[in-house]
Structures are given as structure tokens and as C-alpha cells.
Image (cartoon, rainbow, N blue to C red; front, top):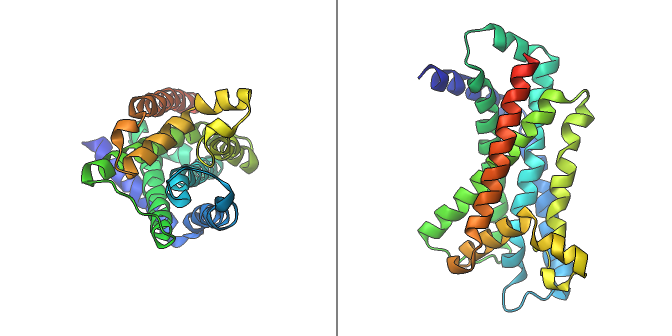
Length: 250
């Protein structure tokens, strides 16, 4: 009960910072939207995705890129709290350590949810037409939330260990790049052999194809268990390492 109260209080603090400085959400949203406009209206006509409209094919990958960009701000928020001595101050107070980390995790969930919602609304204006029923929408939202949780726990580690601002944010660069070497933008069948093998067996492809299948109303084609194993495995390992790193830094 105390952990929940303290987490709620610290979450309110983090959310107030975001409300006072909404440029983080704006930045995270604008870049994926610009990419979506570029690929749909410039490159989309040259990419063959069968009978599926390219915006429907592309959107899951854009969502994952937005989340990968967004979690970098979690690393930065933790890094700045460390630099300002706030983390040390929190440790000296009767606050459960879990509450401090979970407040940052929940802040990431909220801010990324806002970014994803804006991107989906813009995609609808561009012609995105999902055929998912309410249960499939819930499943898609659950996958997005689980992916956000996994990457957020991953972001906490450099936030605690980085020696500079650049180091805290740099971890997200490979995560943003990973969707480009997956089925997010083009079918993997068009890729050279070694690249195709990597693309078909990395986590982003399973998550993208799961979201694509759920949103198109065809959950039977979704590799949902593979996506859940990737998200759950990454999240669990990252959480354990983050908690251990935080305990050591204390």
C-alpha cells in the first residue's frame, strides 16, 4: 500500500514536468509522423505489399519507432535526477526503492501512449482503416504497452550508469534503427539472404507482424506468442538488471 502511494506521488511529479515541458512528447511524435508521411506519399507507391494499403502495412513499425524514441527520455530523466542529487535524496527518505523506478516506468507508459494515440489519429486521416474488433484492439494495445515496458526498463540502465547526457540517450539509436531491418517497411522476402535471416528472427518483426495482423482483423496470422516471449523476456531481464544496478548505485 505504501509503495503504491509513494509511486503515485512520484508519478505525479514526473507528469507535472512533462506538462510543463511538452516538447518531449511533441519531438517524439513529429519525427515518426514525418517518416510516415515520407514513406506513404513518396516511397509507398514503389513498395509492393500485396492487396494491403501501405499505410496499414507501415503503421505498426512507425509506432515502435515512436516508442523507441520516447523511452530515451526516461533515460534522460533518470540521468538528470542523478546529476541533481535527487536520486540520493529519495534514497535517504522512507520511500520504497521500487516506487522510485516504477514512477519513471509509468511516466514512460503515459507519455508514449499520448504519442502513439496522436500518430494513430494522423494515420486515420491518411487513410488507415483498421478492421479489428474490440478484443483485437485490446490485444494490440496490450502488445504496445508490453513493448513500452520492456524498452523503458532497458532505458533505466543507461540512465543510472551513463556519465554524460549523450551516453544516456545514445542507447536508443540502435532501437530506432532496428525496425528498418525488419518487416516494418518492406516485406522480408525482398531482402538479401543474410539480411532476410536476421530480419525474420529479430524481435521487431514478430511484434510488427502481430500488431499488423491484430489491427487488420486477422489474429490467426499473428505470431503473438513469439512477440510476447520477446517482450516479456527483454522486459524481465532489463528489469532485473535495472533493479540490481539501482541497488549498487545506492
